[in-house]
Image 1 (cartoon, rainbow, N blue to C red):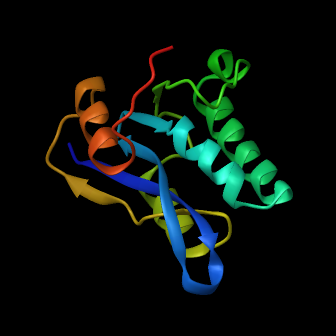
Image 2: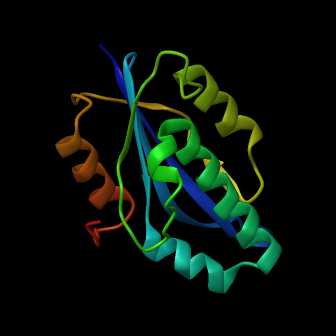
Image 3: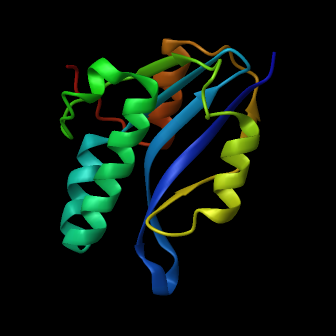
Length: 140
């Protein structure tokens, strides 16, 4: 079973394509994991215009709603949560993430899905998150 990941980045200076890696999707054919850095989201609040920040926050809220209705009701940018969902009926497939990587060039961008030789589980997700997104993990 192929496991893939995509890094979500915020475009903070469009004129030079400067980005901050803020979130991670890890998925296989059966399930998807997602989280973002509350620390980096707060930094983005300072770097983006108010309307851009609101849009960014709404995007994360919408992703959370898709993956976990119950947790999304309590959106808190400082808390770290891993959203895990069965991929059946889920839009987060390799084809869709690949599409987003090509056509989502506004505030939030996705890297093209990359294959990785790991199982899709909490431990591997945390390891990748700390390596690529943020070493500071705040427990809920």
